[in-house]
Amino acid sequence: QKEVEQDPGPLSVPEGAIVSLNCTYSNSAFQYFMWYRQYSRKGPELLMYTYSSGNKEDGRFTAQVDKSSKYISLFIRDSQPSDSATYLCAMSAGNFNKFYFGSGTKLNVKP
Amino acid sequence: EAGVAQSPRYKIIEKRQSVAFWCNPISGHATLYWYQQILGQGPKLLIQFQNNGVVDDSQLPKDRFSAERLKGVDSTLKIQPAKLEDSAVYLCASSTYPPRAGGLSTDTQYFGPGTRLTVL
Image 1 (cartoon, chains in turn brown, purple):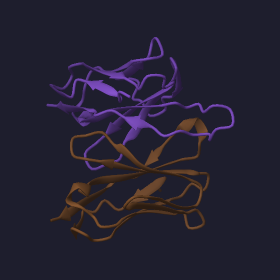
Image 2 (cartoon, each protein chain N blue to C red; image 1 turned 60 degrees about the vertical axis):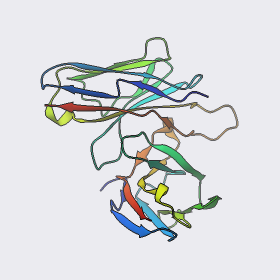
Image 3 (cartoon, rainbow over the protein chains, first blue to last red; image 1 turned 60 degrees about the horizontal axis):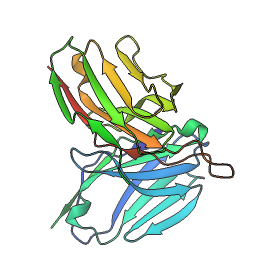
């Protein structure tokens, strides 16, 4: 069983839609949860960073963590064509700052 | 603040040849990571340095891969000899980990643009 599972998509939505991206994990020691955005032929770029459970909002982006279900989500409101990218979730237990990445979900927002 | 720098951006070699990648982390970042990202997959950690010491190299294929960070700043990753399955993007990341006293026990990682390696 992989440490982190993520639906690879691709996910195609019309401009303005609400997008929901999700990851599940198996290691209950994970406390730090990150979402990275990766454009084609670029390195991953940090989008959201959450410690422990709860919600965090930043503009059109909301990250949710449910540690009881071992489930994290990223919501994108009013999606734009510029949001078209691969979204990677990452998690860490804090030990030596080792990150475990999902395989990424490819999102396409159509104008 | 300048980001993580990597070079070259692209490299094409034939199998059994050798290749080296270079990374310069964000200034002041103590920890440096090398990842391998195969198309359609998430990054896989190859090696983690803290200053110039190795923290984790458990997934580094040591028969062909080597890495060093001699002065605790920039780093090189080498593959010798390359195999077809080494075709991937090699990402370098850095972080300020370990945290200052009283801080969280992890810190986010900042990635460079990557080096796309094609082995023919």
